[in-house]
Image (cartoon, rainbow, N blue to C red; front, side):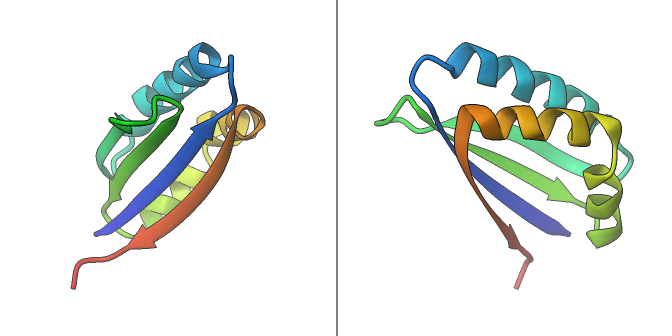
Length: 92
């Protein structure tokens, strides 16, 4: 299993558009065979900061996900609305 932690700092005034895109992406991503979990979190003390926790079966599932139309069509739009950092983790 591989966990992706994607952090988003949403630009002022873009929160509604960001949340709409993330919801669309999440709905399609959760339907993928290799997806285990796909949950967005909002930082308690900073309402412009979000963290998306994604859990995937393996790297092949991530590679498949990264090439889907819902990913390739939505992520560039999200990047316009927020500063993004992404880290991958695996169980120890």
